Each structure stands twice: as C-alpha cells, then as structure tokens.
Length: 254
Ligand code: ADP
Ligand code: MG
Image (cartoon, rainbow, N blue to C red; front, side):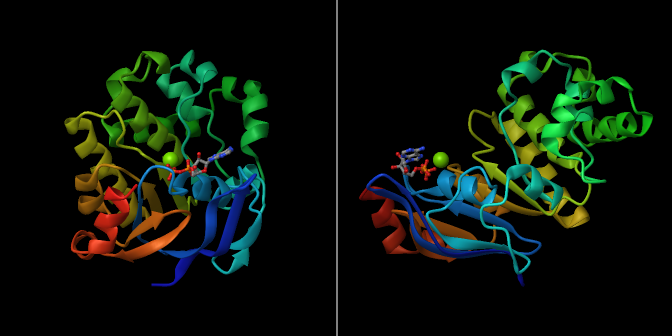
C-alpha cells in the first residue's frame, strides 16, 4: 500500500523537551492505522503537526507525496485532511442537525473558518446539506436526537457526532481521531468501530487513530504503530505488537 501520509524525521521541541524526536512513519492509503504508546509519547503532538495546528521544529509531512508541512488547518481541511475536535462550547448550544449542517462541504475553496463565521449561510437551510446531514444521522443511528442540543448528548453520542462531522466533508481523505473511545460505553464503542470500518471500506477513507483501548485497536487497526519518547518504537499487526517484549517494556517502564 502506498503512503497517504508520510512523516519524515519530524522533530517538535517545547523548550528543552523533544516531544516528537526524529519520528518517521507512513499512514498507508486506505488503512485504519492505530497509533499507541504510553502517555507523553508524543502522539497528540504528532497529530497536531500533521493537522497543521502546530508547526514542527524540523522534518516534513507529505500528503500523497506533496509537502504539506506547516500548512494551516483550513487548507489541509480543503485537501481532505480532517481532525475531529471535541464539540466546542458554542456548538453545544446548537442542535445535532445544525452541528452537521455547518460543516463546510469542502468544495469551491470554502474554508472551515469562513463557514464558521458566515453563520448566515447555514441559516439558508440548504436542502442538499440538510438531506446529507440526515443521511449521516441515519448511518450513525442517532436520528432521534437530531433536534437535541449537542451539549445534552451523552459522551458516546458526542463522539459519534464528531465522527459525523467528518462524514459531511466531501472527498475526505484522512481522518485523525485522538482517543475516540475515551469515555464511551461499550455499546457505542461497537457502533463507533462499525462506522469507522464502513467509512473505510465503502468510502475509502483512511483513518489514523490514537487509542488506549487495546481491544478497539485490535479490532480496527492495521498497521499499529507504537510510539515512545517521541519516536516510533515498532509497528506491525496488533498480534505482532502484543508479542513484542520491547513494547511491553516501553509501557511498563514509563
Ligand atoms: P501523548 O499524546 O502521547 O500522551 P503528547 O504529544 O500530548 O503525548 O505530549 C508529549 C510530550 O510533550 C509530553 O511530555 C507533554 O507534556 C509535552 N507537551 C505537549 N504539548 C506541549 C506544549 N504545548 N508545551 C509544552 N510541552 C508540551
Ligand atoms: Mg495524547
């Protein structure tokens, strides 16, 4: 499989600390790649750099061979690189349906920022966007909460809504998920895994997922990349990772 994202010798320093330290890895096109490792390994920092939220100290990030290092999040979004965010406070006061409808369709150079400020556009109640949002709710099986304020959803439902927002993006190539399973009950976790698998298989969306729930990782992810101290320790299938003593030491030693 060719690399959708290629991280090359990436370094991110915070003062004297190298949070990401000469890290190189590939996210294969069409994969659901897992990123695991002890707390402080640099996983979230790496995500922030790939998604354009943080500039690296050095190194490169390529998207299908094109250098995207340091590009702004809205540009990356337009290129199909989407990272989920917790539903921010302001969006909590809008309904679930409105939350989906205000995601820009990733066309005609419309940026996320522009769409967020141009609230009037949402008010037009674009029938096409509305239909699409209803389809997304249907896939996620949360149609019954369409009119509910996002703030009133359970933790697990919020995670589904976050995923739903990425489904509103046309030509979404890569979704970066930072601990999608955190605080989600078992039933919704199974649902979340189903949705990710469906989007991967049927829409060809590539995922890179940071997750602590090893059962979820084992169920969903191949390859699994293990980070420790800012760099890649090893990678392989979950079965290979589980049999790897170095990985166990990295977790227990931290
Ligand atoms: P992980 O997601 O694997 O738990 P992080 O990427 O969040 O790890 O953090 C890696 C290291 O970088 C940690 O030691 C963390 O304290 C540090 N770090 C992360 N973000 C910042 C920041 N904005 N300023 C200073 N240090 C940071
Ligand atoms: Mg983290």
